[in-house]
Image (tube, rainbow, N blue to C red; front, side, top):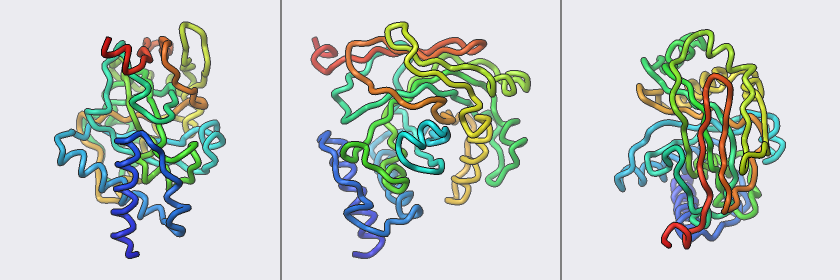
Length: 269
């Protein structure tokens, strides 16, 4: 099978898994030797189809930036995925978790891009491009059975992206961006803390994750754009997203963001 045929076949399999909610074996097991570049080609192919279908790209997520998440999923470096408007849930709204396969929830810091940095920026240029900061929830999901993934598997699967919820934006200042490093972000379920971490868990500084992203997508001919929302990565290990709970992520000086987990039957009742 040629590289282009391999990319197309994996992309088809992942789309089918998402549509039917029946996970597939790891692409790297079915097609040994899948490279990181090929995995990003799979991701790009499926994002292109989403956009052709009417979705709009609104930003990126950086994944696997904390040691906790790398240990949890057995990988050793970050990756990135694309966020579209169809993945965005309004703050305070609900998600029917049975729309997904094996969803998990993470608390993250989100950043809004103002004047975009160049394609191969310095970290100072990235920092200067940030116009606002918010707390966020990211719902991750794997179209690969039992989360049995390598780095290439999750990249092909759009970095295991599913949904995001972003709280109110707070204008970015140099002082706030510095403070985020030591700011504690807590994920709560029905008011009880289930995971907590600081910005330092994200590559030592979430802005470092954004710098990594800007350079990584630059290598594929892409660039951060004005208005992009970027999730920098989880501050702690993810938590299984089960229905029937109220979830929130909160941090001093940034406020909170929340969502409710339900089932399809509850949504349609």
